[in-house]
Image (cartoon, rainbow over all chains, first blue to last red; front, side, top):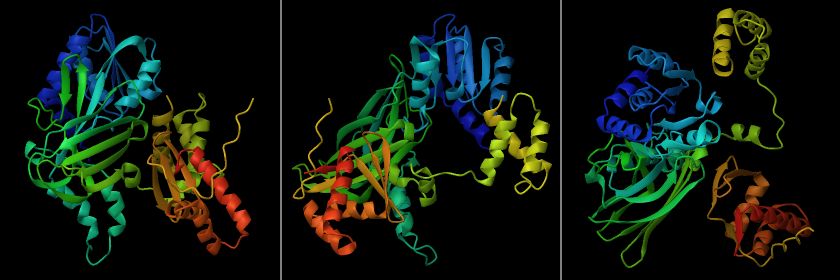
Amino acid sequence: MSDVIDEHRLYLSDQPRLDAYEAALAAVVRDGDVVLDLGAGSGILGLLACRAGAGKVYAIEETGLISLTRRIAADNGLAARIEHVKALSLDVSLPERADVVCCDQIGRFGFEAGVFGYFADAARRLAKPDARFVPAAIELHVAPVSLPERAADVSFWERPVRGFDVRAATEVARNSGYPCRLEPGHLLGPGARVARQATTVEDAIVGEAELVVERDGTLDGLGGWFRAELAPGVVVTNDPGATARIERRNVFLPIAASVAARAGVRVRVRLHVIPRETLLTWTVEVVTPDGARLARSQHSTFRGMFLSPEELRVTRPDHVPALTPRGRARRTVLELCDGARTVREIEQAVAARHADLFPGLREAACFVAEVVTRYAR
Amino acid sequence: MTAPPDPPISLAARVRASADALTRELDGELVVLHLGSEAYFGLDDVGTRIWHAVCAAPSVAAAIDELAAEFDVERAELERDVVALLARLVERGLLVVE
């Protein structure tokens, strides 16, 4: 089962998103420009870039979705102007540099879908020195929120399940961000921008804000959203208060324990994002108007990751790693991709050399397919 | 010309974890992420015990007193080892000397 097609239906039926990207590309693309569409998906940004005057679009899509992207381009008479490349942009080399680079790898909170890494790489290797990037910059915003249903998801792990103690998950639960759809009624006070960063910079995103609670309520945590500047004056955002809000969920960042907050309470927030690790740390301090601390807690998705001692052991600098049977089989496939052997020959060799892993040729063929589609041309 | 060596950690000093150091403990071993350098560090079980002792104690000397009661080692050797480890952790910004 796949929900990919439905995900793309939602993207293509999101009018504020399409309006913003169409306006931005119309403003940014000049006649004859070379445009790079990273993570092309259905290819809509490339199609809009062509409409805006692009002479050539490179639509880069890592998944098999590219067959649909290619078909849609051809059905719209754009096969000659859009070149489709099935790869991750980080692995791509192109014969020319781009004037414009666009993508929608923004995620729910502006960084976690990888835009900063992809654009920083594209700026170094794939784009002209004066290239324009869509989006050009992203802001991270937060607000104090009362969201009891999400807070209950976090505290769920504190209670037994069928009599079993599951509190071992509490640390991960308190250090995770949760997708949610924020409505204005969830906000206890206005949101504030915590940070803004150019999308071609993959450095840490660090910022602070002081939020003010404007109505009495239970503070359960922070609600987060992004505001991406696609072009001067053209923005996409999932801001719950925006009139042209796109159809994308927000993020709920919990605090250690919910706090009864009266109007006037201050919520001091510090965010530290490491984009290349997709790692977010949030520190929240709740103080009364006269400065008395009501609560303070620090959370990080570093503590929300599922790490095992086994994984840590093999990454220690002094550890001497040895390949597993599956690792040896992968090495065999890679070594046999020597530019001379056919896939059939490789499958037969892998099945013969790794009979302990693969009961027959069919199983070996599936394994070879996984490796060659990822690492070979 | 080489820079003069940093002064050793004073035994009277109080040491605490840097605000930039995030820690996680797995099976008695500490993993530390330094937010500034974006680097990960691992401490084995002994290093982890030393980390906890020095961060909780009012001074490095008090932490060494506590550790001396736990480890079967000459105090002078323990002191050298603890100070050497602390110097490395301070140099990497994981611990700060107050």
